[in-house]
Length: 189
Image (tube, rainbow, N blue to C red):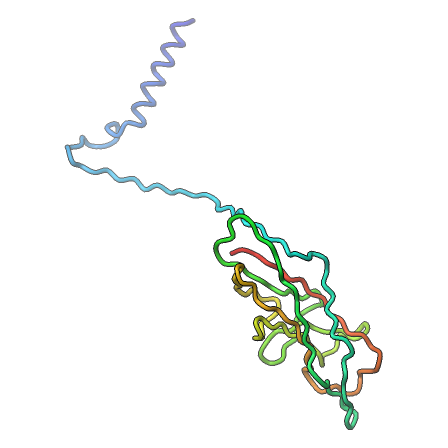
């Protein structure tokens, strides 16, 4: 019983060495000959960076009293309505590479001012086509629902601005509340 096991082991060892021996499948080599083999290596890159917003509770941005004038049955906003959007965060680990921000609408599809995508605005329970909330990054308009590169070492100044898109045909009334919902998302690329 011991002999056949050894014989099988020797036979198997002989077959394996012949299978991996270059001389088993190729012509004899001369000194200085090269042999090349392509090797594919794959893996996963795992980012170890971590960032958290300093204030992770939902932000409430108040524009205060929104004033408008009404002439011949058409309402127009009076004044400017800008508020800061806090993006302060602390980061640790490997944060090299591109860091992206995105202000994503949670109130439905964005509206447009003709150049940029804005957050839609509701008055009461109804969406109004006449108002939008613009995102400003360092004072320049930025589309909502679109990633933009930011420097984690020097965070941008983010602002929201309530703007009028079209003249309002007298649907605004004193005491109405406006609202829109969005999520500020930070990611590594």
